[in-house]
Image (tube, rainbow, N blue to C red; front, side):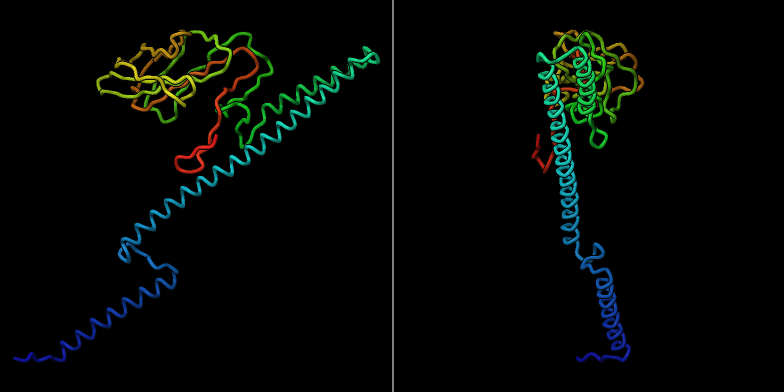
Length: 279
């Protein structure tokens, strides 16, 4: 039995084809205007996923490239300042040798002393040099001015601090004495919280580059203490607690040896690609 094709059926078929052609034409115009093959997810879902992964990789590479450029500029600035410092030391040595001869007089030595004093001031200025508002010679404490004009006679402990994204809110203090002959940064990291006030933590004596063993669970509240260095008797105390610590919270205590230097001995590191760090 044959099926009669009416004019209306032909018209509808033709309209469907025209709509399809018009839609395709609009898509082509959109691609021409945007100069992109994919303008919306429905154009190519798998292609969109590839593009998103590519953009993510591109963003990471841009970040690594910026880190490398900053590191290169940092090294260049550091080398320049070290060269200037070496020149000052050579000049100071020349002055010392010139005043160690029989021709030196009290007057020339007074003048030489003034020169050396100026060289010392210049050397201190170099030692406190900055790049992009960060100190070059403070180790990893790039926000701390490394050399003080007045030395400390005894080792001392700085005020404790905490990471900016800590959940903890309240006051912390440090007690004990430090007798070391080099500056260091202690760190305490909250490892776990069972939800009932019992915490475990780990302690680092190198600013968080490496960590000691995890502690046994203990309650941390107002008046609680964490032993940072049993040998030195250094404790971190939670003086008051408005918001309890959370897992991953980190606290810092700086310990300083006697002398002029207020940085630390830690090496700076730069991640130049995923999993690859330059020190």
